[in-house]
Length: 121
Image 1 (cartoon, rainbow, N blue to C red):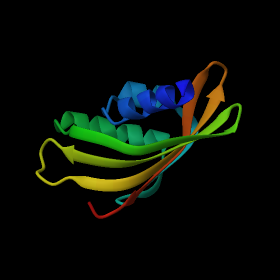
Image 2 (image 1 turned 45 degrees about the vertical axis):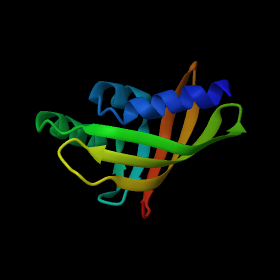
Image 3 (image 1 turned 180 degrees about the horizontal axis):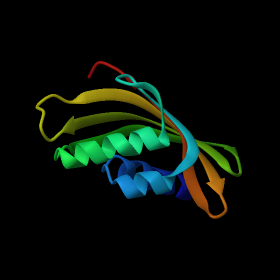
Image 4 (image 1 turned 90 degrees about the vertical axis):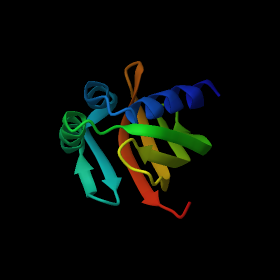
């Protein structure tokens, strides 16, 4: 349960569009797969977040449900959840299934893979 809370805390903060935290929380070789972009790298994602920040874009609402953590090995864990999120500048909410794979490097859990698959609300 402690690992689940810890990983959820990282994941929630990643949704805050804090570019330095994002860069710090992902391994350099991380892969992120979004419906809008397909696979992208950590650096591409951080650049996109910086652009969003400059444009004043941020998530106004983010809600996780059906969260699950599966410890694959002592240093690898999979976090899955449903997310409902709304950009502050939009009225509609996106709904997706999300999967995040974390690895423990030293004492820190780092995101190495993330994918979002859109679903109907």
